[in-house]
Amino acid sequence: MMKDISPAGSQVGYVESFHDLIATPYSGQVNALCWKRELAGDFSEIVHKIALDGNITVVEEEELRALQLSEQGNLAREILLNDMLLLEEQGASPLLNVISYYERDVAYPFFPTDVYSWHVDRAPIPTSTFLCTYYGESSDILPNAQGIQKILIPEIRAGLEKLYNGPAEGFEAFLTDNFFDLHYQAVPDAQPINCGIGNLWRLAVDAPGSKVPPCLHRAPREKPGESRLLLIC
Image (cartoon, rainbow, N blue to C red; front, top):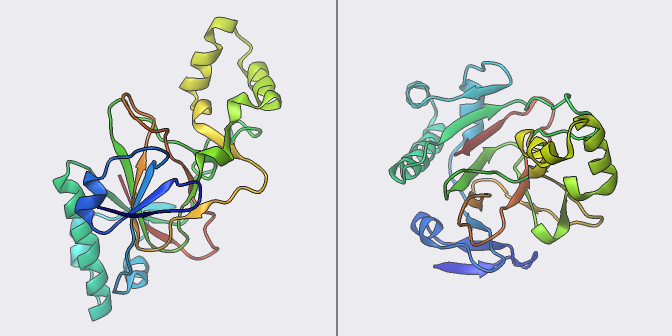
């Protein structure tokens, strides 16, 4: 059951359980569903006890189970394991990551295509993106009406045409092959929606048969010295 709709462009629907998060269809302008939660436990303890491996560390279930944790840390671990199990039972492959930072895209300085840019996800089959931030800075969503596809902005498109420098009939394929068409620019005075801590989100993607436009979102800029704990699939 959908509980209510966010006033921010009627883009976000809030649900009361994992079952509702899975079962509620996107409809109208709603292309993001949120199971809003207040979670118990100390997730920071898990972040600080994971052995980091580069800027993004994938936390395997065996490693998570092997951690020696306090009572509050153990509560957090049980929530993580349960969330992963719920998603796996739906056929998803959740990844639990400790993120210090994402690599920045420097290949095209005037048009970065990294996850700090407003973007949509694409899939060849109908699916959704699930994500939950348990610790650290959380992701943002941008109402579709407040975003402009960057390849439609004249000065950016002109720069891409110079970068391409090929036959006109291949330009659109060039944009798709390099993921330029997935990125957006926020309009002035845009009002992003912060995903918050502990909330499990389901976001519409660009996929065949989708009845709603894909959800615009981005990764946050991490605070210096503070990693994020993120579940995504």
